[in-house]
Image (cartoon, rainbow, N blue to C red; front, side, top):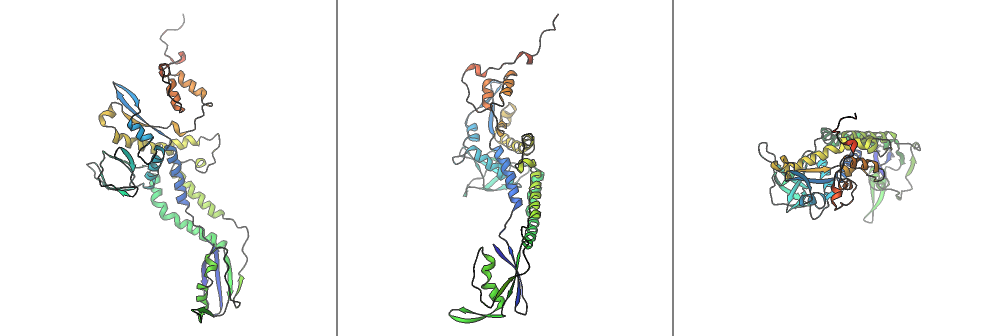
Length: 380
């Protein structure tokens, strides 16, 4: 696309036109942030929300309505993975206010917008809650709403400053790139032209002619326009061929690296250059994903589980085992070791997403002799 950058008018009949390729609207910072948030949200959406409750003094896992709502169908219109991915993304996008999940008619819904009565000594209330363009005529309290706010100070700083400052840097680099790769023309023409308007000849100034008749040359791709024979167009100087945009690419990479650092994402994960020997996946989960998971887990336990039940051992725990690819063949030795230290067959089968065996022996726990405590003295 050609963009008419500048016209230098003169009192004589010669005008210098500076033309440069444009149409390059680039939002490196936005793209980088979306990539970082998407990496984290995709990972968290793989997790399983497990519900543990105490019965007869023993804590066991429950597969009731809460489990189904958290994992399978939070509401009639979304599945669990899509819902939690959306929640995580919104908690980052709306970093200052957070993501509000409301409990409505037995389901969980992510609010598009809301107003909060931010009180210090009493519970907050949320009003004017909008979901999918529909405004709920209800005020929610801490009993039926879950506010999820990320607490990464580096991301908070990034979100508040980058949108203000980085655009000017990219605009500067883009303008510099366009000028270096621009094409400059000399237009020699009479000072005035006669053009047809409503069937009559009308005399116009050369500047007006440039602003109207020749405008299409600078605003459209691969355009052809009729030019009066009295106009002579010639290239001013020669365009340097094969000019690269290394400065522009370096600036983009710098933006990407800053964003990855703020979100604690290893560079090889962010840029997709991970090798087999790299430990970056573990670092990514530890430093970038664990904290957002803990934020969600704490929010759920604070709102869903009562204090009395929590003190007895009831919990909502976000299982992180699903976040990494698990190869059953490569992990055979490890699974055998888990069985040897007391894990049951059904516990191990659940890790690899296999169905439970409904037999008593599958729930038994065994410990090999080398892991048991010796109760006898040494040989005499």
